[in-house]
Length: 296
Image (tube, rainbow, N blue to C red; front, side):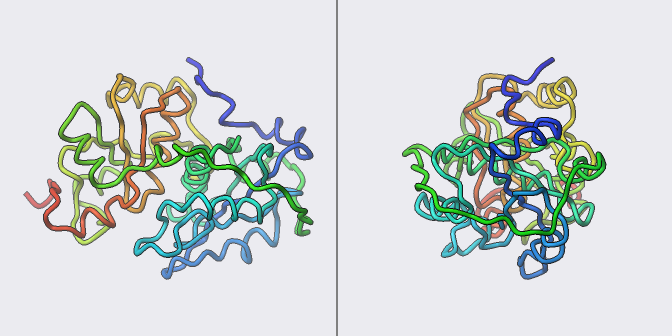
């Protein structure tokens, strides 16, 4: 079993040989309770891949989030993404490689911040890939790290395609999927789905009608690594996601949900969107249906 789009992942060997040909964006997260990201000061400044640039996706109002939206991590405008990319010296012809580490297991998953960045940038027309295994594997193999900042030049602005919103779903899209032939996927852990674990909003449990495909079933521990193609295909097939139907994924805040969406993209699925508001929005509205098996 092979990925349909293996180019969406690159190995450490490949990156080591192409550092001069790509722009490496480090999206490591180390969030505070106020959703401020300490990773640049506490992680990136100490050791990063030579030539890489810190790209703060993880802050609640980070470089790929709408600063005016009431919720954190909300899909940005085309103008904002072009500005953020230009500041990182990413132009129309730039090949981007996304990297991250997981400073705190179970909290700051490097994987989901890479897939969140990939999902947004890919739909904005950027040629981007994720470093398989993340900074943990790069470091484990003894590859070079530096504390020096990389000089940045100027570049032309990226032209975001008109249909780039296709990767984003809203409440109406979720309702349409549940009422039609599509499939709604909850990417949170099983104990969140059944309501016995942490709630990601005012109400516990899951959106009524959703299926559970925990994002950690698709990744290799807490790195930016993914399970092999055969294992991933099996997980997605068992959930009925390789069928010809629209898929919308969600989680607590539209971050972990991008892991499931990215996995589907690896196998060539294009009719997939991530519910932007996820449970932070849905569970706050008592008129929207949720199921909490642990409370029954």
